[in-house]
Image (cartoon, rainbow, N blue to C red; front, side, top):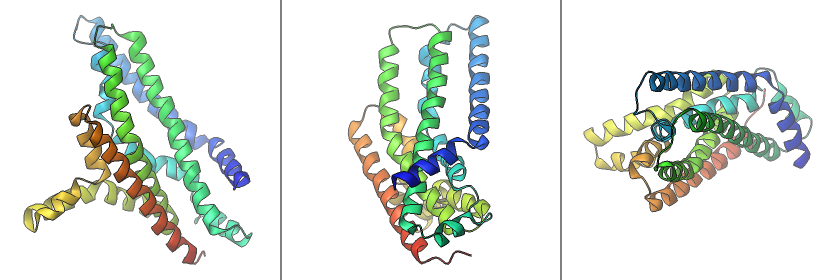
Length: 251
């Protein structure tokens, strides 16, 4: 397993796709920082480290969308290029293939998260004035990231299950978006039209919990709930995905 993980990591971290995606995201962050800095330079004293850094808490749900990219970086159209069929034909256990790619996708996602959040917060720290609320900002970000991390991992596990089980990477991406994003609206409508049970279930969808997390600031039991829900999504997606993949015909 260690050799397989090493090979998958080497392949993933050597892909230009990863670095192009990172550069695009870093360019977007740079434009956001530049716009805030220009606003501050033109005399807006409301712009500070606090006001810019807390934006991270407001966009936690974007981490779910990013799992589509990190999953695609690792899975890399394996059905289209027949590389998955070659791995199976070579005699590699399907469990090793599935779990290896899943773990590497999580590692790539974690590395990208550290780079992107570190770059943005570093820019905020250097460019904008500080006040006595810095400690509160770091506490809020720590709280939000502690709750978001397991939900992101659950989303990553779901995305990888879709990539493994659907031959078309495009269709797998649409299916992932449907479950992670669209399903919340469907359950909301069903809750209004059919039964409040659907609305209760909706509150345990990763995207909904990420949107709720910042508004529940410093409610640490809610962070614990995020870990439980994230673990259920992660384990559930992996068990279902691996069970079907073991019986799936690879053509």
